[in-house]
Image (cartoon, rainbow, N blue to C red):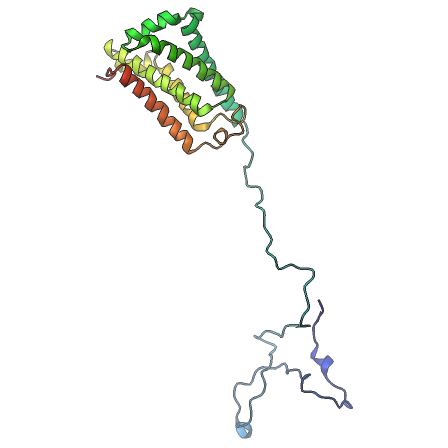
Length: 261
């Protein structure tokens, strides 16, 4: 690019210059004359001039056809910079791992009690009898389904694998269990003291599992690369509703008792 600022005094001709001034005249730097008066009122108005105050000065002259080699007219894509808090989760994932392991170990331990009678558990036969006493139909089939599902849910929670499905299944199991215990407390006329008579353990465990459904497993698990591990949203609400709904449906279809009246 070739551009130069023009000083009006540089274009003033010398005294002995005899050239053509038609294309080299520089407008005077004084305020525009808006009207003529006196003897020269009918004369042609003077050419527009550039004032020193309140008016822009002329732009520098640029040679036609000149290219701006140092600049590009193409739009440039601007990448968004790092946002505050990106990738900063602190101890959140460690807390979720601790919660998953605690809930998973409890589910596995209770499942092994029902399956093999470990740690003073009832075993499959005793668990089937308990389900029948609680009023469940098809207790023989429900024994295997509940025991296997409880152990599988615990293992998946510890591994952080298919966490929304595992947590929703665990929630369904706990909802059915809470309704069964509420039914037993109602029959024993102890429903008013339900949450202060040892049953709050299962209620709190159900709330913990529901929290895992909503928060996801965190980064310390096999689901770490999936969206629900760090930013769960609509799918978590769906899993929560399904877990509660399946637990209530199992109670209604296989038991049908009214735990409140």
